[in-house]
Length: 115
Length: 117
Image (cartoon, rainbow over all chains, first blue to last red; front, top):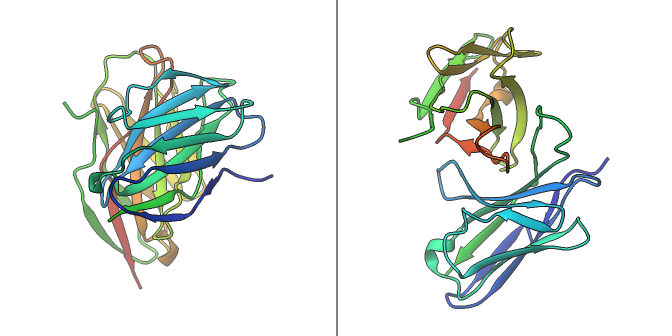
């Protein structure tokens, strides 16, 4: 079956503009995660969705970052008034969370460059 | 304090030899899971292997095995018979099950492995 997909794959924007990043999880996966990977670094958790609700937003770095999920499926991460330090790869992952042995499957990521 | 520590920023291994990538972790959660992911230059994160804190045996998946030493809080990845295609970044990650209901993954900083022909 299809894996996690993300769009766009690359995004170049100017400082101060808003951007939207999209994630399409694996069909039937109720849990969805957003992570950020800065150049040469490990992944940093941003937000977790269970269905359409976000019980854990603790990783969002500022109020310029927001995310929503609709229909228990597609999620959009929005960054308002982008800054150069927002440049990173944004990765989405999904899992079914039906057992403790839960593997998160990752999408290919969106590479964001803020000029 | 770092929850996941990978002390080897870069490693070399000769093709067909085995290599061990180190990972230590820190948690007070009695129930946790440990994961290894591979990230090739293309950028996707590929799940390799999982070890649960209550698992009695070390996990194995093909050429990958996890050397789990609970008392030392280490979960080293062993790749046997290295292949050129194993050249990539490798990330160790942990999920705390009882203390974190979001099951989010905490990642280490990664180890870049280069397999020499």
